[in-house]
Image: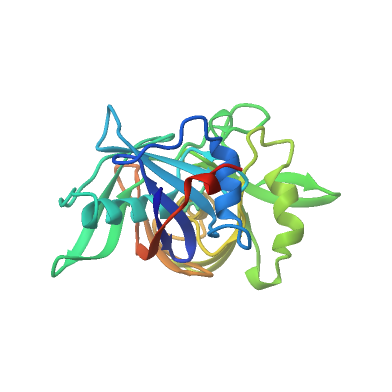
Length: 284
Ligand SMILES: N[C@@H](CCC[C@H](N)C(=O)O)C(=O)O
């Protein structure tokens, strides 16, 4: 099977195009993702991304986290998918419709001299009702609400961008014990489908610094849906305006929560190398 190694600000993926090759019949997808994403025993990645035919859009994108769980949506992967389709998939047009577990998203290629410089994605509206996150508790939005973990109280804002996010504001992201707090918050009983976690330091009205603990992948260098959820949380807590530069360990995403209620994410996408996975190695 041919694959492409791609990343968005260091959030890296193994991209497999299933338009012209078949996923081996009977091959267990979660187990294959765990093996292929392994940093020492596999190719190494935060997730496995499959591109398949779709009935409602140009393509269907599936994202399997490094632990084998399937996510509804991935912001960094969708930019990589759009760039791949433009450059290698014969979809040489500005807008591509991508079906995801969170609905149809629309990436727009920003080109210069025929080369993709960045991708701007219509990420749709955020979902804020508690049951839509999903999160346990009474109806309503979850804005700056207390959550207790190991006897410590955190104030969280919950946002779904199709996938769940728990946003916490901190004075200094560098002081956060990501490996200590991340897993406990990800698997907190309040979140029946677990959650991604963003620690956010507000720099000014239009800039924040973020460190992410991703559901199913652990600490990553960037998270597109996380940057969108962060912007929404910032606005709901009166910390920033609606256009925010989100600085992540791997680089910066520009997020706008527009008047139409949709989030628009702009950032780069890179292809690093391609290769082939011998059939027997996809069997775990
Ligand atoms: N890195 C992604 C999100 C990937 C999925 C996430 N780990 C989940 O399980 O929801 C992004 O850029 O949005």
